[in-house]
Length: 343
Image (cartoon, rainbow, N blue to C red):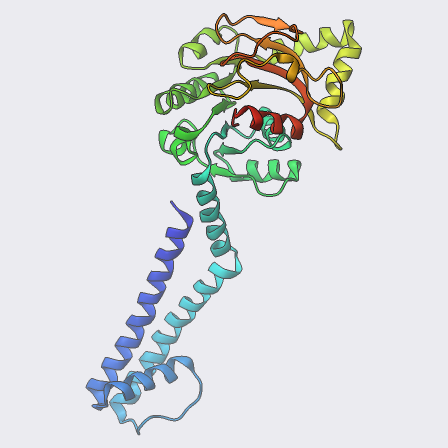
């Protein structure tokens, strides 16, 4: 249930209780003592507030008996009402609700962002990398405690997140899946990841879905579910161990790039859109061979899907090409903007 809606409902119930007690006291004094409505309301308020003022008018025997019952029942009801209001404020429910509503508004403004389904180990690594490279994302997780632990590990302030089941279409829609660029399915089971891929592709056929494979022999099933790619952590780990043994300098270079704290340098790709001012120009214009800027490593041809590693500087840039580059994230982002390639 929406936190702010729940608080509004509780406050409305408390307000109704207060009004009911005041109405009961006012009507009682009017019927028993024959006072005006204002005098009856005033007498009810000072009685329930226990301010110690004198009686509006002298009470007869029946009026005093009514006042006794009003004090016994009314003060108890008022004490409960004000303690409930205090608990909403002191325990942080109200601030948490407003924070959640503010986060929902931020998520509603996102476009071309990423959705990370699962805040476990893999989800935490993905979230950290997206944060460091300046990619907007929304984290989906069933347990709020897991999100808080991840937030503490990242130390990057607030994380846009939704507490809910990522396999639920409604939760995916709340995360803006129709406007997203991609979805990471890193839940605990292959079945859940397959369901996320199926649901996400059904809601937005244009986004990219990457699934984590937990068990052997399910890669084909995950791909059939709609995943664009499947990552097997054990397979990747085996390749990494082999690389550590036979090419340690190369692996060390990549590690240094990933762990550098002062500057963030990454391998990135820039997709050349239709109508870009760079279409038809030679790749030498952006190859970066002089040093200092992003360096072009390879070009993935958008038509035949073949890589041209260290392409000739005279090769023309075509719409749909994917430029594989390495460099500082800020400079790569600026180059991407010049290409008009968006996120």
